[in-house]
Amino acid sequence: MSGRDSHHPNAPTDLEARALALESLLVEKGLLTSEAVDGVIRAFEQDIGPMRGARAVARAWVDPGFKRRLLAAPKAAFAEIGVTEHQVEELVVVENTPTVHNVIVCTLCSCYPWMVLGLPPTWYKSAPYRSRVVVEPRVVLREMGLEVESDIQVRVWDSSADIRYMVLPLRPDGTEDWSEDQLAALVTRDCMIGVARPAVPSAVA
Amino acid sequence: MSDVDRAIAGLEGLPRRNGELVFEAPWEGRVFGLVVALTKTPGFEWDDFRRLLIAEIVRDPDADYYAKWLSAFERFVLERRVLTNEELESRKSEYASMARDAVI
Image (cartoon, each protein chain N blue to C red):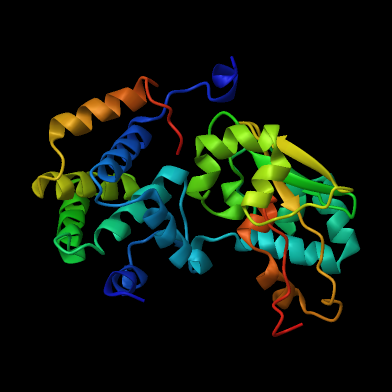
């Protein structure tokens, strides 16, 4: 592939290179794992997690007007819920429907809508996910625990430095009388990457 | 919550907006995660890292906040002799020159 230059025109900054060097060496020496670093980030999820994206999804589920705006002009819609900083040219929200399931990837590096989803998980940055989800998305999704029915089309969206994607999942059945806050709690990071669907806990449903 | 988590939760210097931790770029989150993950390991005490962080803040008060974390963390691991400066420099050059795939 010739895409790296068009994708990531710049080498990592000095600070990025130092952070990468530390992580890779500490992992090689067996002092920690990237999964442990992810675990720390998950532990602080309420602080730095995907709540911005989740709030937008829940609002879209209860407010058809907001949903239209979120799909048509995502940045402006996010501004309505107080998210005004994106640091990226374009944010695109792709909607799951009964016949289409969307999943996002960055095949060349790790472009990710982190301003609305928090920090990317390590598997998102892994070479196997980046290369395989494009070629055999159903297989990869199944391995991650999501079986997409054969009559549902799977669309894979490849992020770039200029365009980031986020999935608007389908509202689960049985949540008709739920509040926006209750709904937001169902929307995980993985749902908005497209490798999971919001699930109603059986104890609550 | 571990002691480290509590220490982090109580850190007043962490950039926050409406109470939420704020990272201006993904590498800042990685550095934060690296420090917290490693200081849960015996022999890599959070208080020792914190002393180095405070020293960095005193040394260069105007530097980017997580750049101070990065500098303090480099000193932290070098002092414990788990990495050498040469290893760190050569790995950093590999990333900077894109000889290694820089995925952050």
